[in-house]
Length: 424
Ligand code: URA
Image (cartoon, rainbow, N blue to C red; front, side, top):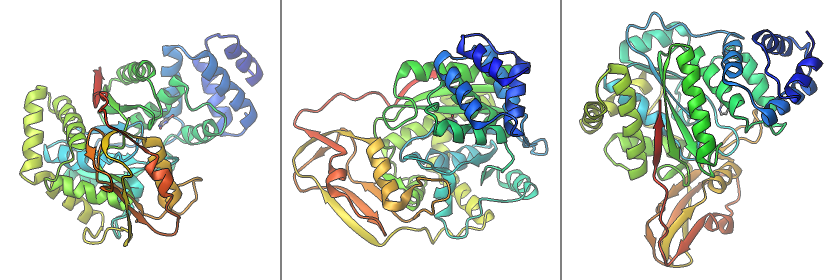
């Protein structure tokens, strides 16, 4: 076997065997296959695709490229949730304690933000002293005692994906559906949960901007889950505007806490309760209506908030000290009308430029900067009324660019639904 034959095979739209894919992944990990050869193969896959069987094989080979998490000592059903990434997406912060309050276990590994989207681990680090790296023993002990832990992904979990994802990022091959599916599912399967709910974001602020591709990705991930005997449900959701009102690290944690205390922003409420109900429904094998009643009850009676507090205290965090910049600038509308659009991609990039996100992996971010929207899409705004607050630090506030994220008109535009469909 050699890599040039394999690249040519994919270039000629042929199917790669398990052995060939295994040869590629092992060869790339031990540096026998070089970046330029892997790049050529990734591009051939991006252009010519992969069959379902090839994608399932690739996922399993990647899954076995490193450690997997053994949750057999957790004495409960472990459900996991994943989002393909969005702007203002603090769903995990709210959903994890909520689902745990309903009696299921969330033993979740999350990532950091890269590009214009945020990451749960950075957000959690805005809580003073919150530990995101804990030993396996402490992780299992914590989830057995309080049903919930949110930690950073272990270094040797799917090392093949780490290398390939970094290469895809710089070779124009991030959009390939089989490569996205195998990247996400290999990590989910390695994390040891038994059931998965995947939030596939669709829109300009997301990895995928159209429903057709989102459906293809969702169907493929459901098939990969089934092939591994793990129930997997995908929910296709809208990323046409930032989720909730806060975009940034500390500011999103504060919004999540306010949410758990009963202060609900509509889109965040709808999405979180829907995803939580699906998790509870599959985890406890109850109907979706019953699950939704339980979820709503745990949110309203404060048990979900208590779980969040328990998790923060177990992981050493001080809930009274959350990083938020004290420098605030209010941005006001230059006209009256309906807010027809708040561009999530531009908003995410502007928060990143303020220091709230990374351009490269090693950048140190400012956890206290961010935006707090005073208006959402569909709201009416008057001239000179506040559109948002900017929490800023060392970066410049680009007022004109921020205002340009808002499309305001006297006629209100019809919006896409928040939840498009569920694929299982
Ligand atoms: N998230 C991942 O983990 N991998 C991808 O390829 C895309 C999103």
